[in-house]
Image (tube, rainbow, N blue to C red; front, side, top):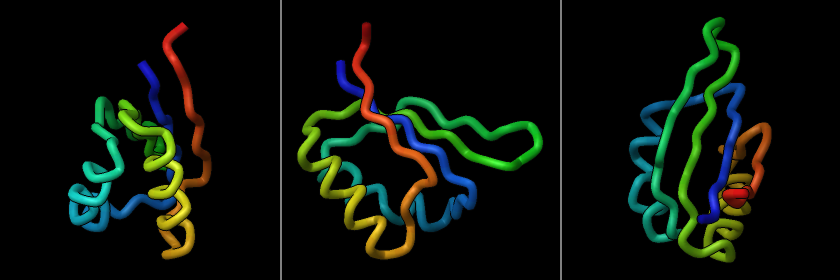
Length: 77
């Protein structure tokens, strides 16, 4: 299984909720969402159905100013 782990230092829940269709079209399914106890960052873990589409989605998010601070593509070891 391929996964994508994102860290946001500034997280807008309204924008995130409004982007659900775009994430789905990019083959991303949210598995977990964590908030650091001090509120400094939000971490999101997605399953990735199509790495190419997921990378395009990340690129588009960056060009719109909604890029995560970190993005890591992972696979189950």
